[in-house]
Length: 345
Image (tube, rainbow, N blue to C red; front, side, top):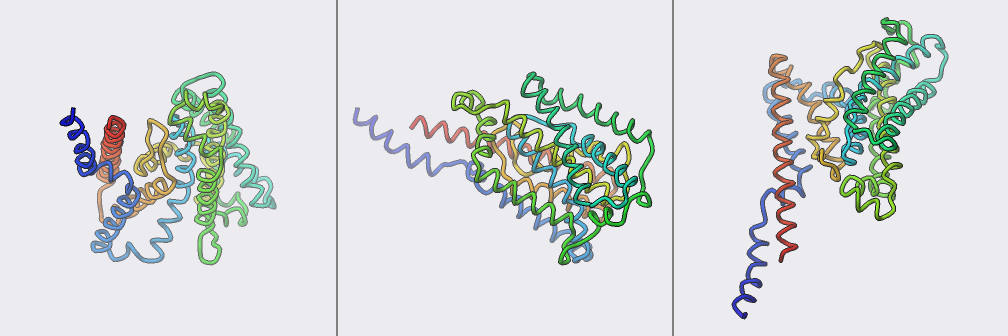
């Protein structure tokens, strides 16, 4: 009996000393991602001195702004164990409708154009959220169907035609090209979204409930959390951000097309995965998602500067995403294993 007690007493410190490196890594995942971004930046700068110029950094931040805004919404969706494949189509639909309204009403206030885009996005996201929360349709099925429907609506509304810069007002185009105190409006809008999302996730009851639903839906239900309301909210927020991004996209590129942002949802999901968001739900940090979007933006900008062929650019990005998924999986398993051992002790 005494020997048994000694063994149990001695096992505690030994297990603590042998904590998995991967388990510890989970606490500093964002720091590691930041370090990786800095290493890549230094390497590219050594190969091409134009990479870290003020002008190029400004371009990278501007080009990454829309991606990071969408990634914030996608993070909330993934946290609830869902996915949204329709955001590219929602973006295109919102952008096309707003572009047509602006072309027929040149005096329209740019803020009203932004509000219109957000409303369209929320409506689209609300439909998807209702299908998933009320009817119990799988997120991947509901959003895939919505993607085709919204994309079809975009082509129908536009009659297959483009809307170009000469059909848009100068004030509307300034949303994507103008600046405030030397900072592009796109970056300013993205920073506002980050601040609101940070407060919502960390300092509101609803923000905590979103993570509770993703971590353990059954326990959340027992605690009185309405999964239906949470899912409807999350997909509506995702839709609203996609609608906003549609306005920003059309203003930035001065063009509205039926195939705008086709396949862009995959880049958004990739940014979330790189940032450490678990597809299994329940975990993900805003800082990681932003860094994931920045990493993708850096790769898109740096690889052409290094004269890497387009095929290899896609392959390299895919390899980095796969590596991130493997690391995240190993980290999660290691954390779960250590938690299980602690409970047994």
